[in-house]
Length: 202
Length: 96
Image 1 (cartoon, helix red, strand yellow):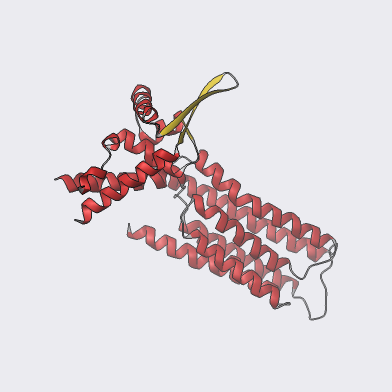
Image 2: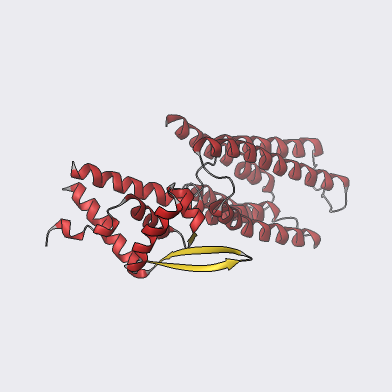
């Protein structure tokens, strides 16, 4: 049948276009786990420190260092988990973990993220703590939207959600921690589960 | 003019179709990148890319990175246009 051949051509075109320009082996499970780490980290920070109203966390106090340590632990754990699960999945899909596409993906993700990170550190050094959670959410969201061109397209919706959350957070000072938990914890768990279950169906 | 007239004979081959699909969505791709994605031999890739270059659908640039030769493939505006028409034609033929 002629039209059968045309159909095959079209699906071959689609397949090659996405395989050559997008890294699709991101895993839902690593998203879920990252969300759980973030939520646990935030609760440990909150209950362990148990800040009383009116008390301030200053830059050189031990509890500030404790918060920073928790944040770093959450970030490192998430990256390691994502790396292990993603490598496995890429192998199964026959996708390369380190090629032109993943380099582009990483660069487009890291540029907004590192810019935001440096900006936040500069602000912290001049005692501007208030907007930290909001800035983290906004820059992380921008990084996701930027990187979505080189991976699963729907990552950009997670990015939009983080940006909106970050902006609302900026308008409601004092609730930073809660927005942080929703953005880095709950949204990751929801998005991760959606990806995870759509993978399972295939 | 029938629908079939828009089907481009040049793209009626798996490797040439593949080269065009990849170059449509990438700024440039080098020889090894194409080879891995398409799973073809060196000679096959070279001869089919020559054909596309002759039609001025793609540009082949040779250069050196250190001592290693590097061949870089890019799509031309003409090639982009032709391939879009080809995809449209395929879609129309299926819808019929």
